[in-house]
Amino acid sequence: MTGVWVLVGVVGVATIALKGAGAALLAGRPLPATFGRMVALLAPGLLAALIVVQIFTAGDRVALDARAVGLTAAAIALIARAPILLVVATAALATALARAAGLT
Amino acid sequence: MLDLRRAAGADDELGCGRGAHGGGVEGAHRLRAQRLLVDRGDDELADHGPQAAELRKHGRVARSTVERDAPYLPIGLSVAPALRGSIPRRVLEAQLAVDEAWAIAHVGDGRYDRDRLVGAGVIVFVAWVSGTGLGVLGGSVLGDPAALGLDVLSPALFLALLVAQVRDARAAGAALLGASIALACIPWAPAGVPIVAASLVALLGLKGGRR
Image 1 (cartoon, rainbow over the protein chains, first blue to last red):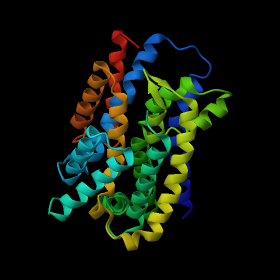
Image 2: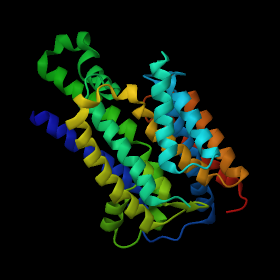
Image 3: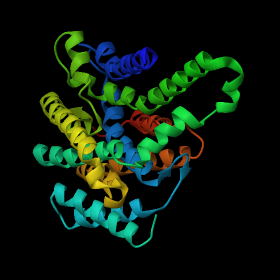
Image 4: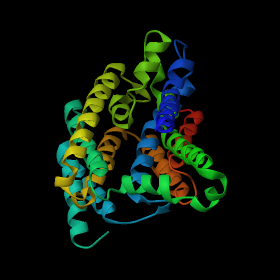
């Protein structure tokens, strides 16, 4: 049991370090314009990657399943300018219906 | 402009879904954790006794967790210029830069709003903890969370945030490239690495252009 808590502590400290490294290293320093341009592209790039990983990954392989139906439904809701809560609820409902229809 | 409370409300559903994964009978995360902790490498560990097996098991869990959390390095770098005060305070505030709060805090052109980051981060933290607790307690009532489609709440929320952030061709290109890099990495890279690799899109910023 102690070993488990040591493990929890170690991974906790590692996560804190990963998140805090930028804040500690860049504290109070003026940043070059190039850095600003690079950071501007990080947000869309990382968000798109997060979506791809969470929708098209099953274990360690690429998968196309009911989650893609849910994401498509979310995209349609966004095009229809639905509020954000309705977008995520539509995605969940579409995924659930696809699974109920036999899609994995 | 995204409504912070609506986005946080969506995240509360998400936390509940994750909690239900933990409290439900056969959640995907639970299965993955079981596989990680129990199934892998039993044969190779058998010759080294229970303590060695335990150590290796812990090592694998630690490595897997750090790999999954590796995307927080570029995320932390991106919000760093927005944070104020002493280094300990900045490091503390940077801990609130979870995926959803980080995306909500982006006000465009690579600039992040510290107040939005902290506000959204606190709301998301409370939503995750309470939602996870509710999911654990009510998991058996909910049944299999996958059947409810709860696993797409998070990517659907990210899609809404992404659409709000793609304001020009450069951002659209970065999103397409980030998605392509992540997709290409999935079959061979450990969890977390596809996201870190996608952060290479930031190199496009070296080319110059409008901010």
